[in-house]
Amino acid sequence: MNQFKDMLKFFREKNGLSQAELAKIIGISPSTIGMYETGVRQPNFETEEKIADYFNVSLDVLRGKKEPTKAQPIILFESMGKHIEAVRIPVLGDVAAGIPIEAIEDIIDYEEIPAEMATQGQFFGLRIKGDSMEPRICAGDVVIVQRQEDADSGDIVIACINGDSATCKKLIKYPDQIVLMPLNNKYDPIIFTAEEVKKTPLTIIGKVVELRGKF
Figure (cartoon, one colour):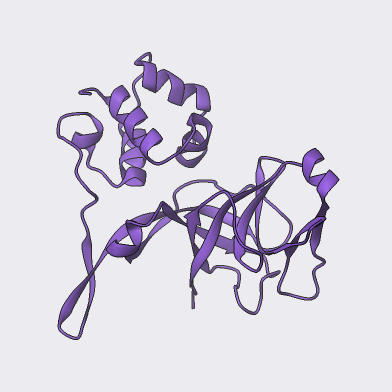
């Protein structure tokens, strides 16, 4: 494993991403990711940087010039005389708290999470648009999301509808229904019967585990 194409596939699979998911994050086509992984094409420097930033590795590691190591923590703050370490995670784009919109547009920023937390799964940030989760979550806030395909009733989730749009809502599960519930009562809940779930692809992208409010 000493070439970019091998390292790209290694990190993509390690993070549980399909070629299409990684392509959407980076802002290129899935076929381009496929050509990178087969060595048919090489990315430009800007694309390499985006990929390296997303996987939190150096360009030398991504290019196969150095062995990959664990993500290097940075010192976030001190508490009771002890350094609390954290790692950077990307804020991938905007997600609606209202009418569902395309979930991930690009890497727009970075947030830090505790290094210990980062060992418990894959995390990313999403910036909120809309007001359907007010007053708890407001437009411009960033939510920290743990990637997972299911969640418990009552959890705040990022749900993907029809495969290409997503929304932040409270998940409510009933024996015969799944409800995506807004917290703002001026919005109606999005209700799916068991039969509608079969016809309308509905998947959980992840569970919101933390809110980073913006002033």
